[in-house]
Amino acid sequence: QKGGYPHFMIKEIYEQPETIRSTILPRIKNKHIPDFTADGIPDTVFEGVNRIVIAACGTAMHAGLVGKVMLEKLLRIPVSVEIASEFRYQEPIIDKNTLVITISQSGETADTLAALNLAKEYQGTTLSIVNVKGSSIARSSDYVLYTHAGPEIAVASTKAYTAQLSCLYLLAFRFALVKRTITEEECVNYMEQLQAVVPAIEETLKFDKKIEEICKNLKEKEDLFFIGRGLDYALSCEGSIKLKEISYIHSEAYAAGELKHGTLSLVTDGIPVIALATQDSVFSKMISNIREVRARNAFVILVTNGEKEVDESIYDYHIALPELEDSLAPFTAAIVLQLLAYHTSVHRELNVDQPRNLAKSVTVE
Ligand code: F6R
Image (cartoon, rainbow, N blue to C red):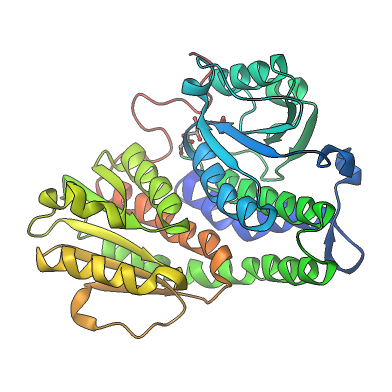
């Protein structure tokens, strides 16, 4: 069942090249253009949309945070990401020109389903990104874009997350093409880059042993930080939840520029800081932030997109991901964060696949 792997989680981490391929390829039509005809999503869905709301919980919500960046970049319309359990009790600003995207692996999360039903009450168009076929959220949505991640058994979500990112990127490309905010040529280019994610993840998985080594330094820690800017902040949120849920180590995700507005006081000798610096546009700012935590003797694990010239004194470990276009770095960075959480949990001899107090599908409110 575990295909020779010690846990479902690591098996599912390794399945990602395949699950991303299965999610993307069936949606590629002539000349690398994303096409949702077979999914029953006509282009008319995107016409007239002037706002997008993404509602989800946990890791699925973190996928939404990454999706927001890409959707706003390509569409130039506002996108908000809402925690479903908050959103459902508010009076949302939604009308017939709002596209409400709900994201859920199980398709059964009670709060996400309630958010979806609320969106329908307000006349929004609903589209869900779901893994489990025929689940409640899929059945209740106007349109469904399925992730083809296959069954996810480990409680900590891994392959569903990157499949959700794949769907969000495909949606952004098609939507932008329909809205004419990108040309067909640009779309083809984006799609080629998206497909390059698959071999890049295969390369990233080769860091497995190195990450296992790094995690020996984390297993006795009680607190740690993930820091990043932009897409790397969205990724930090995901890295933090993953580590918390299976290693039981307290961690916080911080937008790197916010550290000095309070939290830097918690950065003391030996505190691990996982610093994600995959985005060129804010790279030098990130390096300054890393210097700030380093000056307080933090134990720094630096992750960059490709080899970067960085002063060796500012980190303890450096993982240089195979280089991708910056907007796609979340795919490879996610693999590193999943492996960090996994190996830390294994070193602590915890129940990786079934962490305490958590269930795979949260059908209670
Ligand atoms: C974290 C995790 C959870 C789920 C959340 C939503 O690893 O798995 O945070 O992402 O409970 O679940 P779905 O996607 O089934 O709606």
